[in-house]
Amino acid sequence: MTYESKLFYQKQAEKIIQALERRYITGIYAPTREEAIRLVMKEIPSGATVGLGGSTTVLESGLVDELRKGDLHLLDRYQPDLTREQVYELRLKNLRADVFISSTNAITLDGELVNIDGMGNRVAAMLFGPSKVIIIAGVNKIVEDVEAGIRRIKTIVAPMNCLRLNRETPCAQTGVCDEYACHLPERICNKIAVIENEQKKGRTMVVLVGEPLGY
Image (spheres, rainbow, N blue to C red):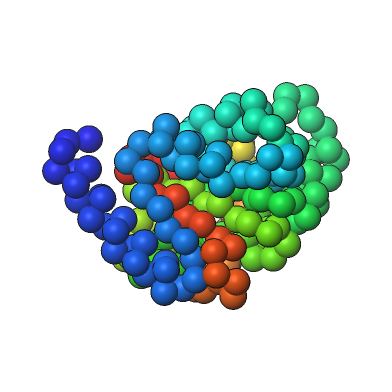
């Protein structure tokens, strides 16, 4: 990115962080993914059980590799050769993790976190259960408002995830969302959650990374 682009996104991040603080959510800016990893690892107590939401952002950042080396118990859904039953058990255990780490599909300039899930396990852990939730988001996730966030998910995030998951959905076939032709069980846009505030101050921390990450 150019110097001007980096400065632009940093200014946006500063505005979002101020909005997050009003919502009892901690906001931190990391100019690079390497700095984001350092900040996240600093927040995890020794010996903690750490859960992971399905997230291309978290994988792409390199954080999973760093977590595997840490003094913690990682509920590692990205281990090779896991069965569907084992992944499902890890999803359940995420709800009782000490720390849950994921990304968000979109974050508004006013600090709202917008997400759409297929099963709902990722947003469930964001909403309730773990004592601490850490959200990593690249600057490509920034949107104007909730409506723009949902539109971003339906037109960008969902089609790319359906292609990654080999789902036979209209968006995977044409690149365009067709709400009325998208049916279960292939559909991944099933459960929408908008986090406006956190009841316990500091339970949720958002690390805004000054570069694009994930979808």
